[in-house]
Image (cartoon, rainbow, N blue to C red; front, top):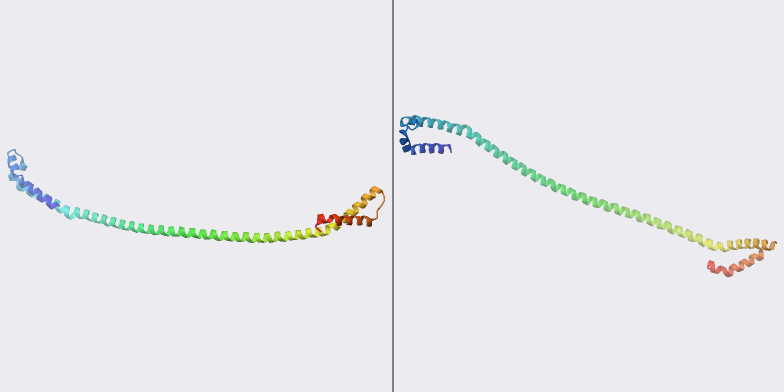
Length: 196
């Protein structure tokens, strides 16, 4: 690039030579042909030094910096790609962990529900058995009461009747006659109440 510019400058210098000869009469020292050799020497020397400085010192540093930046950018891109792949793997693992956790939670909930339902059913069964036993006991007690009730009622009726008659008449009445009347009444009317 620098060589191309250098040769273009030299070419344009000689290309405009006619213009220079025409301007010589104006008294400009740059256009005086006797100074051209020194001017070309200094021009060549200046651009030569500039070319050497640029090509040997500045351009290699710029080129090295560009290569270094390019390699750093490439490394950063590769690191970013690795990070992206790693992040995708982590996200997949995270999704799998969440899915497993949900399944485990469902299984735990299902097992707990089944366990509670079993316990409730067992308690219900035991409670039903206890209620059935209590009902049987009460039925037995009721049957016993039904069987023993007529005798007790008869005894109470005899005692009450004898006391009422005693109060009405003022004299004691024979309990055997009152008991015969009460038993006769209980036999005729007892079937209605006791189902005998």
